Amino acid sequence: MNAFSRRGACPALSAPMQTGDGLLVRLNPVAGGLAPKSLIGLGESALRHGNGIMEVTARGSLQIRGLTAESARLLAAEVDALGIAVRSGVPVEIGPLAGIDPHEVVDPRPLAQRIRAAIEEAGLTVRLGPKVSVIVDGGGQLGMDALTADVRLRAVRTGDGVLWRVSVAGDPPGARPLATVDADAARDIAVAALRMVAERGREAHTRDLSERQLNSLAGWHSVAPLSVLPDISPSRGEIGSVDAGSPFSTLQIGETIGESVISPLEGEMSGRTEGGASRKPIGLFPLAGDTFTLGIGLPYGSMPAEKLIALTQSALSLGAPEIRLAPGRALLFLGLSTPSSLQTSAATLGFVTNPADPRTRIAACPGTPACASGRIATRAIAEAIAKQSADLLDASLILHVSGCAKGCAHPGAAMLTLVGDENGAGLVVDGTAKALPAGYRPGYDAARGIAGILAALRAQRHQGETAAACLTRLGAAGIAELYRRNQ
Image (cartoon, rainbow, N blue to C red; front, side, top):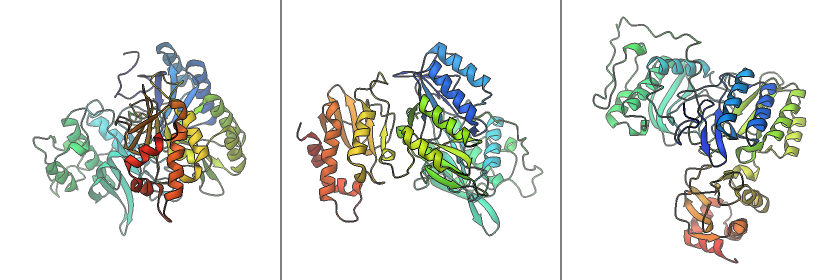
């Protein structure tokens, strides 16, 4: 095995990825959460073997940064010694409160486990690319609507009980709906779609499937075992119907098969803002009885290990039995009867405790000096903007501060993107970090340039108008001019 994986592969515990500040590993516990003592142990390992920076990504993965080839091996050994089993393989993701949320439609874990096992049985793990994923959303207080996936299954209540709405290629507003079916058919459609993708190669996704293939998936309602599903390829593209009198029974898959076949997605360096839970996972969420889950965010998805250890020690003293990683760059502290003291401790340590915190509107990678690829001090710029213009960063406006053109923190387009290069801090309007900037300022003065834009926004915004709508009305050329002024 190579000392580090190529970019585009999953930086799992066994295959760390090279980044600007050393090797990075990412892990998701098989159990879904961690005991407080285990998270403390991981923090101590991050201090011993990395640069002491820990992250929770937008998809709810834990990352440890700044490793070397040797220290990554030592870290892996310590994770094993802590008894933390981590997932690998095709991600089949569920909500962070799955199985304990009194508001969920149904517990998604059994269906997710059946899909993981079926993926292994079909031999798809090695045939699919690292970015292919499945979401099984049981609903509840922290749904998965804002995350993209190749295949998504969402539980819905009907007069006949619970069915699963199956769609492909995207998030709910953009995904292609296929069918609303029972759990058996939902599993079959999900795995059939992945088989189609696998036939197209490791770079393929469900968005690459043909109309004929999608129509075939939409018409699939069989509960035949996966072992008798036809070989579905782009050349054939059809799923054969199964006769009502078929001798085959529904496939029974053992609960213990394939428990280790999930991994986080590639491309989440520094907590990318590709998505997050429908509701921000920050604040109080009632559980059964008189207990609560407290969601606490990591600013920009990142925190020094010392502070994470201190927060977890406080949670341990309050009797929190488990901590779960949450999409949206947060930690969920379960089973608290008096969460206010932990919330106070978190705020004192610099964590995000309010879902309206302006730092949740800013995506910022490590930047300089943490990352060798960075050209600007992204976190310092982000902090200055958050303090100066907190009232203007509403839900319609995401500001992306990128140390370089790779755009690790937010690969998609943002209304305003600051990107570092040899000319300083460039501004991209309604685009990605890879786009040509419309104007520049020195990196140390970038926050003042954004402040000028937001001051104009404050002065010219119409009543009831969102920040994004106002900026659109001002136009890209006008925004770039505001950014360049008063240098």
